[in-house]
Length: 375
Image (cartoon, rainbow, N blue to C red; front, side, top):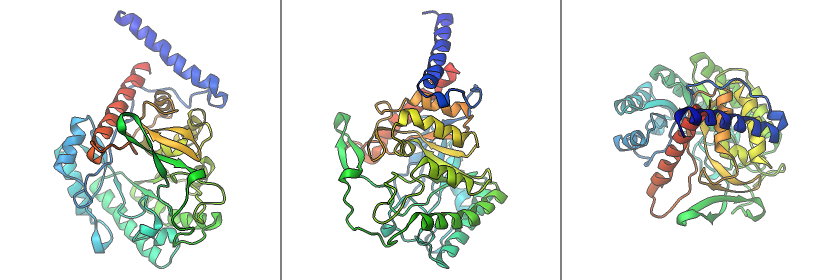
C-alpha cells in the first residue's frame, strides 16, 4: 500500500473509531471538542523499587530506556518531621532532570491507598481532631514545597479500606491477575478501627479535607489529584465502611465540592471501569464529564475484564475496554498530562514487575502514536 492510500485508510479508520463509539452509545455521539495534533498527553510512570530509596539513578535510567520522560515521583520520607522541606522536593526534581526526566507530580507520604488498620497517620480519614488538623497543616507545607520546587501536582487517596481484592486469577504466561469478586469476599475482621462509617460521615471527612487543602493548592497553583476508591462496593458498605468515591455520581459530587481548577482527579481508568456494569460503553461519559471540566490531572491507563463487583486486572491489550477509543476520548477533551500503566500482572520471574511495566509503557506509546496519526 502506498503512503497516500495508507493515510486515506488511516483517516477512514479514525472515522470508524469515532462513529462506531457514537453508534453504540448515543449519549456520547458528539465529541467534546476537536482532536488536536500533536497530542498533549504523554506516557508517564510512578513506580519505585524501594521504600528506603524511592528515586535512584537506576530507576530513572529504567524509565528513560523505555521512553518515559515524565513521572510521578517520591521525595524522601519526611520521618518524624512529618512533611517535606522544599529542598527535599528540589533534590528529587534535580535528580530526575539529570537523567532527562520531568518530575510532573509527587505522591504524598500520607493519604496513600493503604488499609486504615495499617496506616500510621490515619487521622484525616478517621475524622480525628486535632490530629487531622496537624496532618492537614503538614500537607499545606508540602504543597508550598512543591510550589517552590516547581512541581505542579500531587496525588493522594481518601480511603479507609485500601485496595480490596480476593484470590488472584491465573493469567497468560504463568502470570497472576489481581481479582475482586464481591460474592467471595470475606474480610478478616468485620470492622476496621474506623468502626461504622456511613455516607454522611464519609462526606464530612472528605469535605473537611477539601475545604482546608484546596484553597492552599489554588493559591499556590499546585494541582491536587485524588484517586477514586478501588473498588466500589455495595451501597451498604464493606467492613462497615461506605465508599462514596466508588461510583461515577460520587466522583461528580467530589468534583463539585470546590470549583478550583486545582481540585481534581488521578483518574484510574481501571478503577473507574470497576464502578460500571458495562465499562467499555459507559466509561467515555465519565471521562467527558470530568475531562471537559479540566479536572483530570493524571491517568492510570489500565484495563480490566469484567464489571462492577466481579473483575480481574489484565494486561491492557486483553481487557474488555477498547484502549484506542479511551485514548481518543481523552484526546477529545484535550487531556494534557501523563498516561501511566498501573496494577500490572505479576510473575515470579518478573521482580518488581519491571517487565510488565515495560510492556505497559510501550503499549501506551504505541497507542498514542496511533491516535496521533488517526487525529
